[in-house]
Figure (spheres, rainbow, N blue to C red):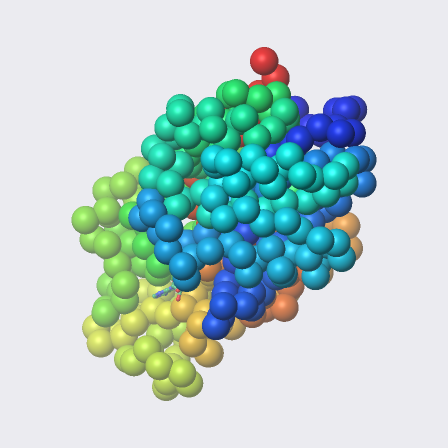
Length: 398
Ligand code: AMP
């Protein structure tokens, strides 16, 4: 278990608490179009404000290249946050310096302020010590509530955490506890389902999972490389023949460790990748030279769902097929629904995240039924690779 300090028992009344949040939310025409991240972040803010802290929020937004950019101001987000919290949110047009200091000094107990985009300063992404000193002057305690940014050694995530007593916020805590339930401390047997486009982006993930699960389901475009490595013809399918040796090595390692690898046994193939293209379902040894594998077939779905029925934990990253284009969403939807039913019946802990996985599970309508779905893309994948995230390491008890 990763050791980290929570907010339990921390005296915050009257103290200035700097909270690193991820308010990098979708915006349209200068307005927040999806406030999910703000609503999730509000839990920690409400708790701190409710206990009489002076809450100072830090976030990045977009990629402003180290200098102010009007379109990337956090100001509209302060307004959206006011709506979510039902209280006034002060705003400072710079995250360091005299204006920020004045806004923070004027905060009453229970007050909330949002400071301007951290990335308006190039020093943020450089983990710059002087910039972190300037941020640290604004607070007495530091809280990281942004798992999605914790794989980056940026000043507001690492150097700042080293300068103040540092704690995990409730959102970060929930994320780490859910991830722990899915991997380090998972109930066994545990399965991982890894799909998505390319095996080249997931080699480290597969390598780490082999040490931690009892069954590994490989689907999506990346399964084609494994099939081709076994000598099967995959026609015009997405495939990385250069990685055949790596794919074989993964299968051999799995066999040596007693990890059950489930590869597709049938596939949905088409000559064109377009909605409702003419397609057929074939055994994986029957793919024609002009055809593309765009989804796994129903026999594979049954294989996978039967396996899941005997498991206690499922970790899911990546779709089983090209789910954005029907009918190639069928397998992803069917397995997601089966996993959701097992979760609802209390038989399976289901944790998912990374890349397009959230969109795929939302498409299947199971987001609410899974035990935990992480919206953190890069950080989730690095965690799946078994890497230590610098922002989490900085929260270790010292
Ligand atoms: P990733 O970001 O690696 O999880 O990849 C997700 C993408 O993989 C989605 O856009 C899917 O459309 C794509 N994908 C899944 N299966 C296939 C397939 N058999 N052929 C081509 N693309 C696929």
